[in-house]
Image (cartoon, rainbow over all chains, first blue to last red; front, side, top):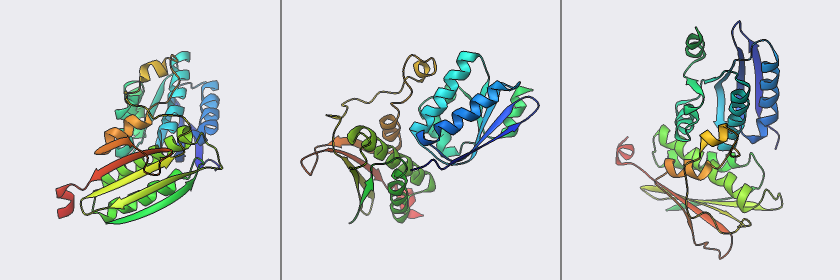
Length: 115
Length: 147
């Protein structure tokens, strides 16, 4: 089955925002990886993954996010995540994803943390 | 007591059919929205495990899901072909630090998440005599029944 994930990228003065719309699963890895690679190739290597448009995340999708976190850590780039629903925030907390990536309720909260 | 049975293709994405049906069952039993979300995620993860480990993503196979609604509980069985051998006997918390550091491959979170979200979750002796059978039980909380 093809990926039902749509990825949109926005460039802000201090950060690149990657919006995930739809399902975050292993099927969406190529799109997420391509968006992340393009973002860090720009002059704004700090990336915010915005998930408020995400309706479904499974642990294969969390593994994709871990691979992005791995790359960010290796390159010394900043990575933030925002907008996960309360349920998916609970799941991300369960696996301790939030111990390794800064998570925020909203994009505004994430941007405020940079200033 | 009512039972709903599904046979889903062994292909990523079809776990959502089982997940959404299970969510409907949980709602019919009067479970809270938060509990319904827990059921959705647990069923999705169990089906993905069955596809990946039990059926090795062989598209000629199916994953069988049975949901039994009782007055105060929802029991969900996910059955695969057991191709990866005996199921794990122990479930450990994933070591995300090692995964983020690249020392371990990302993954190994599904069973851990399921066990944290539902009341009971275990591999049981397969009732059909073959394959792997994973059973989850979610109790309806008394508070939820009053709503």
